[in-house]
Image (tube, rainbow, N blue to C red):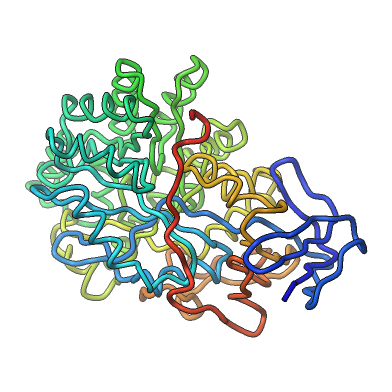
Length: 460
């Protein structure tokens, strides 16, 4: 059975062209001039964009945190992603202290296998740097996982010392892997947080005030210097602050292999949300925290200049009731995370509508670049013959209002409640199968396959 997607504007990083797309089985068979292809079934894309499926390279499904866990399972989270035009996620397998990387990877495979509605891959979180885990990094690469996240924050949980980071970077350089870094100065932050609580300042806004942007900038600069010393590539996750962006831009201008992502929450939300009364601010607690609105213009500019290469979500949903509420009386106990896997493509399209980024840049940051960055191109991230038929038909004229009442994520609030957006997903294909159409969801858990990834294609 072949499917013809007819009459749409096929969008790539270089812009949009009117073309028809023929899907045969799980792959794209041809892209041709309008009227030159024929299929057994037809999807009319007239007046709509035809995009490569979105790739969210930073999600946390079923992630343990502070005695609880994020509430989206691999099933609910990937269904929500599909509704929003994301057809691939890369989730984080979280190594606990005292455990091995390979046993951790096996554990995450068991969580995801047979439960995902779209394709998926993994990154490894390295929280226990020792001779054994460093050796296991090579085995992880052999298993299709070539990216390793480390933390300069969360002492006692995920935190790594500069020496441990140095050793992991040396190993990454040796095996061709990429180190991903949560860059905040956790030692200083914990002291500021303790001082705030001792002074009786316990509201959610203190989460932002005790994690100032200067300490994100400092940690980012330090990570860049360690990468420079070791020759390791570096990918800064969820960059939120102008100070951190300046450090990344300087390193890139000097020719260093430093990359960075930001997230929609840092483009649209601010510390004013953290300061909402009656503990409502807890809904917006994530790390790094939401910043003053003045940082948003810098981040949009970073996306235009490619100093910010990727937009991911850091999707890590905790319900307000019973989970976020664990931090009443002490903001340090609020589970960190904001839900967003369903809304990334729409929120970034709003940046196109507002003139912040181009149509091509939207597709580049949300699909093409993450595919290359994490070893999936051209299987993913492009509308081209031979590529997987992960395709989004997107209606740029449709309007929608985001709300917890209508979203598909398994969480009891929306960080973007009441946001009115222009543009909406019309139809989504995952490896040739229509999983979302105007009349509902047609996918199923288990359709999604594990993606064994190559190394960073910008480097290898």
